[in-house]
Image (cartoon, rainbow over all chains, first blue to last red; front, top):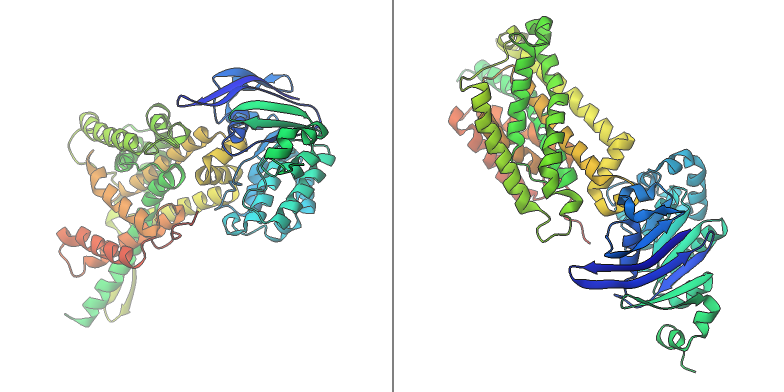
Length: 236
Length: 318
């Protein structure tokens, strides 16, 4: 579904990603893990088109993404739930979801997806008329994920949904993400909470200082010594 | 002073303040819209007002296409039509000049493009002022309507105290209010309006939603230009103007926008209303040369007491 080949990205002379390749298959759950500054967010921004690569290719369902403008890419069914939530603070919760449904696919399926979002996150129905900026961090994350789902996406990209949240809230979020995946949405997740993230996924990638150092199904990654030591804190 | 005369003066200042204030309010919304959505400080806003005045003038006088409407309806239809015309002018200014120093192109750069915007909008302002003098001539003109020299009389209310409502200003005020309400509904309840607000709130996230931010910024600049131009067309019915008139009003626009609360689009209307009100009221006690000074004294007082403006939110915590 999503295929990235030999992608390299530079920020003002600094290499952020080097020769990164990644594949996400239909209905798969793929996780990219790695430490801070590894280039995970840059990878997402490049897929969304906010950052332009130096070289490499990105294709989505057979279309060359690099030939399209950033805003056109969302209309293909790619939903990007950005790092740090980035909800529209001055818009109400409902208006945030409506903006998520800006692409045609979102408008056509609006009543159905809104129901689904409210089933996943009942609090969003309760807070519908409240300014999104006044919500707690966890609720804002729910708005951000709901906003992503509102376009009835084929691919949902989640950038560190656990960032800055209490562990209990994170558990809820992970549980809902897993639910969304079971409902048939392809998920690409970036996380620092490695154990939980890998557990959910079919396939995992480890990104370090701009290089993909490891990839494979989650059992393989969890069995890898480096992953066990650096990310899971297991030493035996 | 005779008490009846005093009451008459106060009542007339009150009504003049409200009518003029509503027109100023509309004028301020245009600037507030551009700043609120694009974060561009537009020094050429006064010249867009001036272009609105001349657009209306050429539509309704002489051989203009609206001349057949006559001097009663024509000037107001002309003012409203100045809106879409200057919308197009604004959209072109954005496409070829302002878009190059604003929006996603400069987001995250060291000054967010503000230096470039300052030079570009100031340059547009100067070119339009002086170019306007070449094209439109240097003789002050006005959109003549018999309505500007006739008035409704209300009263006498108290003794001989009577309120005189200038017909041209009253109609202009009504058009201004209707336009402002229409814009409010556009921004608040339509898909376009919500997308404009989303693009203002967080342009990057808006891009992720598939919103073409540059296109919406162009629309915001066009709308802001058109709204101010409508106010210009309305003012053209009761004052005489030349190509340099924008400078007098850009200061009023900025005070209105800051008073209303920077970033609050509808707050700009109330800010403009306040400015118009203070200006008319100060005429009771101050000579006309000091009217603008009165505006700034009230301006300073309000900003000292409420730095975020009448309707602005205090600075958001991150």
